[in-house]
Image 1 (spheres, rainbow, N blue to C red):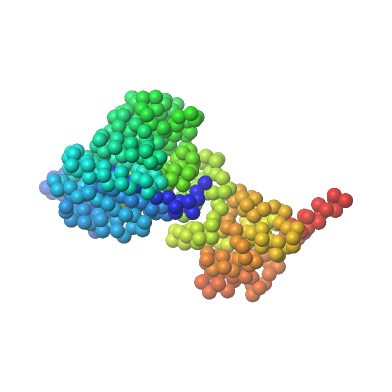
Image 2 (tube, rainbow, N blue to C red; image 1 turned 90 degrees about the vertical axis):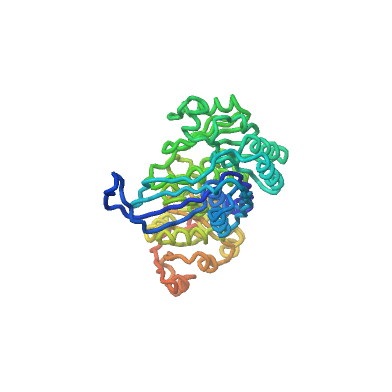
Amino acid sequence: MLDYLRFSEVKVLCIGDVMLDCFISGDVGRISPEGPVPVMCARSEEYFAGGAANVARNISSLGASCTLLGAVGKDNNGSKLLELLNAVDDVSARFVELDQRPTTIKTRFLGHGQQMLRVDFEDASPISKEEEDRVISSAVSMIASHSVVILSDYAKGLLSERVVKAIIAACRTEGKPVIIDPKTSDFTRYAGSAIVTPNQKETQVVTGVWPDTDQEAELAGELILSRFDIEAVLITRAEKGMTLVERGQQPFHIRTDAKEVFDVVGAGDTVIATLAVGLGSQTSRADAARIANAAAGIVVGKKGTATVSAAELRDALSHDTSSGEVSPSDKLFARQDVQALAEDWRSDNLKVGFTNGCFDILHVGHIRLLQFARDNCDRLIVGVNADSSVKRLKGPSRPINTEQDRAELLGALAFVDAVVVFDEDTPLELIQTIRPNVLVKGADYTIDKIVGADVVMADGGKVVTFEIVPGKSTTATIARSKERAV
């Protein structure tokens, strides 16, 4: 479901209100003698690209590319925002400069990690007709070269009714889906869009229904679809997850994991970015929504205006058991992607383990080896010989099962975190790519005969051997089957 290669091919056009997010952190140890307010001793000041610019950052983090169209003032904050975005891979910022308004900046004060106050400098009045023309002209010229379009509305004046309708009309002409993060209660302006993503409060304002239960969420979604020319609505319901209601389909509820919430800043940006990348890679709306829900669950556990990487997302999906809908194929990786995943795990101080084999007919010996391997690491990557490799090693009658079947069977095991198929006769190149902290192999090999042992130990890792279970092998299983068939 989460296809890295197709993610990398997705090009998203994000149009919306950009802003600069400032976080001032410090310590609070006393009350001001001037009034009943805390005094914070500032220790650090950090700036992040926020609003629609944070949507663009999330798109880049997922491995897709983004063109960002927004508006800034002719000021230092606009320059700082552009500088931040220029440092983000695969994000191209196209800003319309406005003469009569400042760049929006939100400054948050955090004492001991908790937000105490937010101060906004902004002008949220509608942009002028001439400025609308410039935005529409720029947007329309870029729609054809992108996979999907996002309208990220923060009610700061850029996405006026005229601008929104013109962009949606151009997208329909080009056959490009439009996803909208709405801020107005008038959804008539969103006619022709593929999905709108209101939160609970926005949903209540539009429908009069607070989507607290699944039934109420379904009702609210159906009311929106009955009143407006919109293909689908994804209602984000905070700790209760999301509800997707689309025309001609049964409503789909996605549960969220119960996890500690550190900071909800930017969670909506992560949702719409992930949803767009999913749809742009031809994922179904239901699967794209489930992926977006997982991404939101990750980002709320981070500080500030954060993003989610593709590796984090794949890891979260493969370890999510809350819905009971995890597919073994979610654990299957291409070689270039498993390298990024291993690096991401190590950056989280997780010990990465590796073992390999043909795993032609899965038996108890395999299971015990894999359990043993997982007991010696935090995340286990399993290398599987490709069909061509198995034929060279085992003969023309092998494998019994295809590489895809063998990989998916391994992916179905809870103690296997990632599976990667390799074409070579040995896993040496794969081990050099992954650089595992722990290499596990059967004890029928001495360490000096284990392929890749020198690579792992040179990196400061360790090699662990497992006592083979007597009589348990694919060859023995095939032989017994032939004897019984006679």
